[in-house]
Amino acid sequence: MNIGAVDHVEFYVGDAQQSAFYLCTAFGFRLCGQSGPETGRPDQRSLLLRQGGIDVLLTSALTAGHPVAEYVARHGDGVANIAFAVDDAARAFATATERGAVALEEPTTHRRGDTEVVTAAVLGFGDVIHRLVQRTGDRTDFLPGTLDIFAEDPDPRQQLLTTVDHAAICVPAGRLGPTVAFYERVFGFRQIFEEFIEVGEQAMDSKVVQSPSGQVTFTIIEPVPDRRPGQIDTFLASHGGAGVQHLALLTDDIVATVPALSARGVRFLDTPDAYYDDLTGRLGSPDLRVEDLRRTGVLVDQDHWGQVFQIFTQSPHVRKTFFWEVIDRHGARTFGSGNIKALYEAVARAEVTA
Image (cartoon, rainbow, N blue to C red; front, side, top):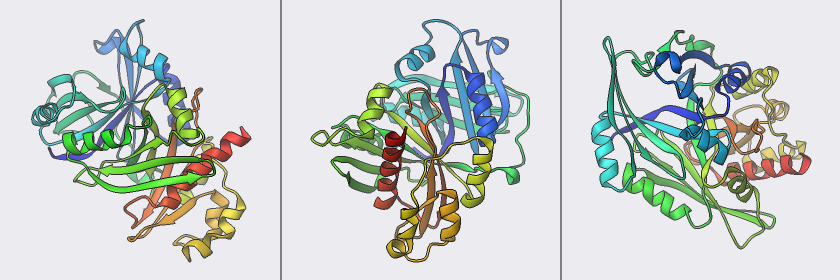
């Protein structure tokens, strides 16, 4: 199974148009296509947003009892599908199901002109699926015959965000090991990092798995049940089980991107000044100026290969579950304990001040 990058991410939402307005206005995505009753889908509406190499599909139900409506009622707005780009969707589907994945959609071919897209789908974790996508021809024609494209891709040189760096996944206590084993067995991922994090009386376990291509990375987190309940427990309760806690989007210049996003209305978690007072003592001299990091609230950590800079948004959702991360890698390949702990502490600070 040759998995390339994340082909696209699909959110199930209560109102696709409202969600699209927020992502386009605040994050700089561009509305490029849609499907619905006018394209033969009377039961749902999907909107395609693009920025750089990121494709986001927003889908809302138009009829009662639709699976999308049931998902939103159970979990709220959130990530329902992380699609993988593959060389051969039919073969990948057969391999995944032979290895124990639950089949959801048999391989289907979509054609228009010289463009051909083959898709299939299997269940991942919780209610999140993985669509397997094989593309031939013009990528701008996202799903020929099903989704109408009415705008060309914007100039990638003008984009703030470039690609999906990783997804953070919360699972119930006791499900971390089996979930990691599932991705290793079914998709050929390998574990590249693990960390036990303690913050006060709270604790969590985390492991990072990555595709052989290095282009799909999942940070999987579970709470520690014999410790005081924390933010992972809160997510699982509010979300109604396992799900995607956040998506990290890569940028080439985080100290320029964060102010630009803030000016558009994105609200980031605050970082106390004391974090930056101790920064050089903890890490030495970072690649970016400490004054710029302090001004923007960006966090920094490092591994054997380099440094990573990141910041987390406040959740824009009613249930305060899913949120976004903006990340800028300077050679770093993995996730240091400082990064994970900084996320945990940043969210904890937001809960205290909310």
